[in-house]
Length: 136
Image (spheres, helix red, strand yellow):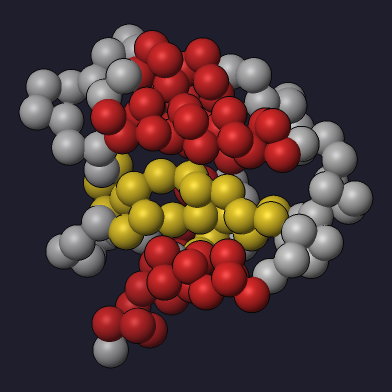
């Protein structure tokens, strides 16, 4: 059914978004309520329309706690999410500035930066904030 399809798409999107664990909006909401910062952190990554699905999904990454991954600070996560907001709103130059400050070993930034650079840091006409994935 739809839940299994979404789970399958999330699993395949980990390669495209270059993160180990992707979550949908519902799971992210539950974890925000139940998970402590010592267990892990969450980072909003993008709004995507997975291949073969009709609607867009907001995806987030499950990030290790700060003690386990100190290279990615909470400030980095805040800046990244600010970049995502700018990206979705079509302010691609501002998004680029926010994302460009991520640590070099943080591969999640590559996904959005590729879109920003390919578009000359300018959102396409009639931009709706959703990245449509061309394949599984």
